[in-house]
Structures are given as structure tokens and as C-alpha cells.
Length: 279
Image (cartoon, rainbow, N blue to C red; front, side, top):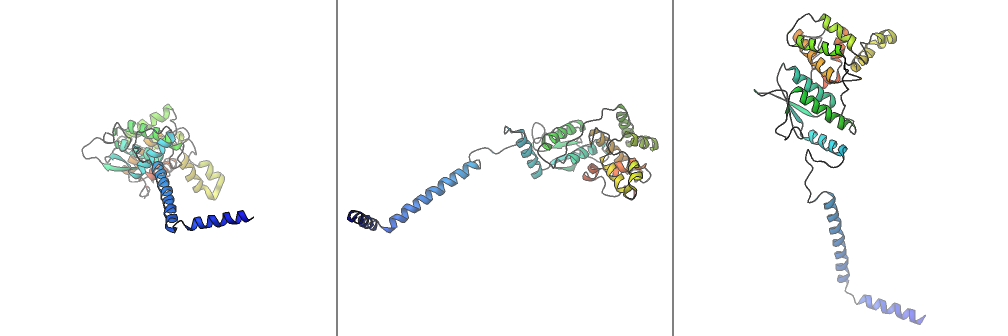
């Protein structure tokens, strides 16, 4: 018992001989060391010494690549060069708008249109791509890749592959470019080609007071493509936009054609319906 008390007193005397400042210095040094190590670890996690991701880089995960590319377009939107009265330019606007890819339109000043520029477009950011087929193919491929993990992106529906749709699109394009002004037959045939919701006629009979709402919903889901908005719909709506502009509205159109055009989400997003078409 005496030995234990003696040992305790000895330890107390030994600790009393250590200057108080020395203990503070030791504790401070330990704290500084911990802070330095934590800062170093944080610095490493942020990618210190590594090149930042650039469009075209591969992270090893295609979903991460798609998300990073989409984020870069949100920060700096794609640039779509267009010119007034260009059906192909409107087609590109509709496709990009429906998919949800961030872009801005800029007027062509003697250059070819449509053309698309931006990060990850073409062999370099300044090169871009030109032509409606190339732009739509680029948008379709990226839309499919990004839609897998991003709910803001809507992929295009596959084409219907129907010969009668292709024939109607050729006639509609010719009419939009200044062909025959008698559009009754052309627009009447459109109703029979639309899939999805159809023209809403059945809804009007079945749902009575909700007829208009049901018809609008049906028109919003009607399409020429296979199960949703696709490249065929972009071509059709571009032609209808030109026809509506030339005719001064759609109030004289058959209901199915008018609803298909005016209830199109892609048309609204592309800014083609800023003013009521029937006004």
C-alpha cells in the first residue's frame, strides 16, 4: 500500500516538472498534423493534380459520361443555326425540344443551316455538324443514352416504317414549300394515319362533359411514329407549322389535324405555338 502511494506521488511530481507550455505545444502540433492530413485527403478527393473532365473523355461508365455531357450543355447550351422558312431547321428544333437537350437558336448570316455547334458535337467544338439528318441522328443517339438515367430527357420513338406515312410526309412537305393550296384531302388523311390516342372521337361519346379534355389528351399522345413522338412526327409538325403560318391559322383545319398540331408538346417547347393558331 505504501509503495503504491509513493509511486503516485512520484508521478505527480514528474508531471509537475513538465512546463505547461510544452504540453500545449505538443497538443497544437498534433492538431495541426491532423488538419494537414485531412486537408490533403480532401484535396486528393477533389481531383488535385488531375485534368478536369472534357466532352469526349471516357470515365469508364457510359451513364456518367452521359450525365457529365448533359451537365455541360446545361451550363453552355448547344447552338442551333437556323434561318426563317427552313423546314429542316424547324424539324431540328422539334427533335431537340422533345428530347430535352439544352440549346439556343442563332440566325444564319449567309452560312448553311441547319447546323449544330457545342461541346461534344463534331470532331471539335468549333466544327459542329450540319444537315437535318446528321443533327437528328446525333440528338436521337444522345437522347437514348441520357434517358436511361435522366428523367429530364425523353428519347424518340422508333419510326413506324409505314409506306403510307412516308408518302403523306412527302406530300405535306411539297405543300408546305408552296404546292397545292387545297389541303382538305391532305389534312383529312392525317387523321387515319395517327396512332396512339387517335382523334378523340370515341372519348367524346364515352365521357360526355369531359370530351374536350379527353380529346386534348388523346391528341397529345397521337403520333405517326411507333408509340410516341419520333422523327416522322417532327417532319409532319414542321410541315404543319409552315402551312398554318401561310394560311393564317388552323381554325379551318379538320379537328384531328388541328389538335395534333396545337396539342403537341414538342411544338410548345420549340416555341411554335406562342400565339393561338386559330386566332
